[in-house]
Length: 86
Image (tube, rainbow, N blue to C red; front, side, top):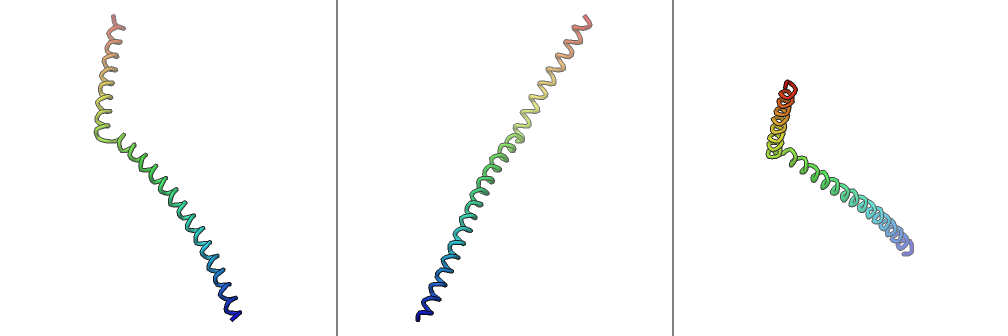
């Protein structure tokens, strides 16, 4: 009877140690998951910004602006050429 109680106590201690180790492992996994969630969220936000920057509407607007700037430069070049010949 005493031997059975001692064995039971030993097994209970072993189980408690295993539970403690499992809790630590679970906490470490939860921390990793939290960090992964944060990284995923940040990556998603950055990707959305890049997607907006490269949207067809944005590209079209940039192309129109660039064409306007090219016309302005061409006009200024013509003006400089005319004034240097005068």
